[in-house]
Amino acid sequence: MKRSSFLVSSASLAALSGGLAGAAESVPGGAHLVERKADFNEAEFAKIVGRPADIRQVWEAVAFHPAMFNNVKNALNGLQFGYGYAPGRISMAIAPHGPSSAYTYSDYLWSKYRIGEAFKTKDAKGADVTSNIFLKPSKALDKNGDPDSEDSIYQDTSIETLQSRGVVFLTCHTAVEEQARNLVKGGFAPAGMTAPQVAGDILTHLIAGTHVVPSMVATIAVLQQRFNYSYITLAMA
Image 1 (cartoon, rainbow, N blue to C red):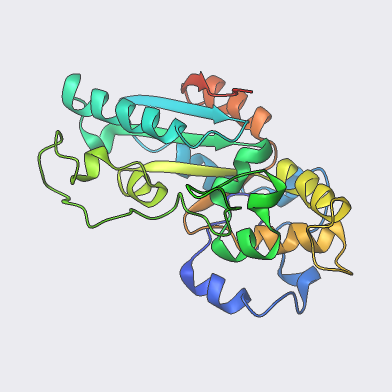
Image 2 (tube, helix red, strand yellow; image 1 turned 90 degrees about the vertical axis):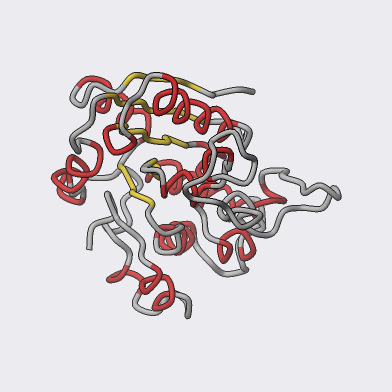
């Protein structure tokens, strides 16, 4: 199994939910802090981000600002309905790193490692967020409705809805490794867990459809240079 370009399926999440038995063998790509080329499935990555498209856009996000998904939704709508690009010919990627990597963390990770507390993310009542509240739509959506309707998929900003519209979500290997160390140092990891164990746990419990890349800042350069993605940053403080 490769750590990079690792597609997490619901089946693999279920199989891994029991813990880290045999972790050294099951963690994609091994336990290097810096991802090696031999551990990166570059062909699969190229297939994912290089599919046929008429326009390509990559969104970088560092600081934790979930409002960015509204901008992504607006970009998709503008390209599809305003400029007339066919939905299947729009290639869009979300490139979160730093705290924003947590967008691609499963509920299991948000709860186990107290991600909301670690990243100071509160819900509407001021309590620490304990699950990935950005993942699923908050209501039933009309998949074929009027794009002006608040009940259509075209006005929803959940990760799953954006994925259904073709948006690719990436996860930064380097960010995960660094965050694992910070979670251990900060006391957010269960007692006795090492940073490599935490990193392995994170990388095998990402949300479905996430693709892991060696370094997000390097990947953004590759997306621009090799695959002709235009670049937008949402690295807000």
